[in-house]
Amino acid sequence: YLQWMPDSKLIPEALVRKSQEARNQAYCPYSKFRVGAAVLASNGTVFDALKKCCNVENACYTAGLCAERTAISKAVSEGHTSFKAIAITSDLEDRFTSPCGACRQFMREFGSQLDVHLSKSDGSYKLMTVEELLPYSFGPEDLRTGENTVGNSKLTQQ
Image (tube, rainbow, N blue to C red; front, side):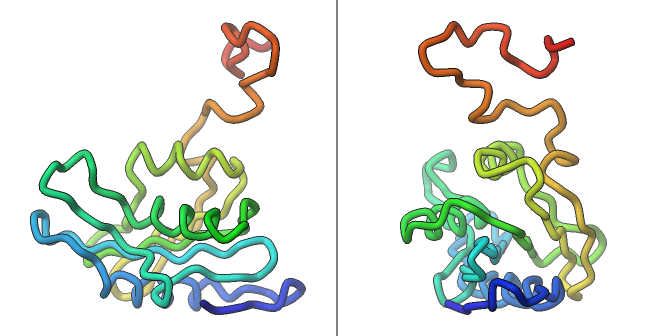
């Protein structure tokens, strides 16, 4: 995997390129919809094509994994739980690749301010945050240990 210097400025285009490389590893015999992701951990480690951060389909569709969840799970399995950015790429030419609802919630576990680079196959991208993709989300702070969690949603707060 790639190591960025923690104090250096990440070039979003480089993260998008890494997600494009990861897309080439996709296992998608059913949908033929290749997706790659590259995630930047807070310490500068990038999980990308070398870690095979791509979608992995299964004949039982619901058992498949999206590229975003694959990338973040690989990072977490190696001890990283704080992230700065993620880039997502597919073969779409006419619109930006956006994460599915399950991936938005999965990313939300690690922060609502994570930068998400939605890209097209030509490398152009649109920057959004998890909060913009999943407003009024449910996250770890909504689970208060030892308390009744009903009503803890941000929607009910004054």
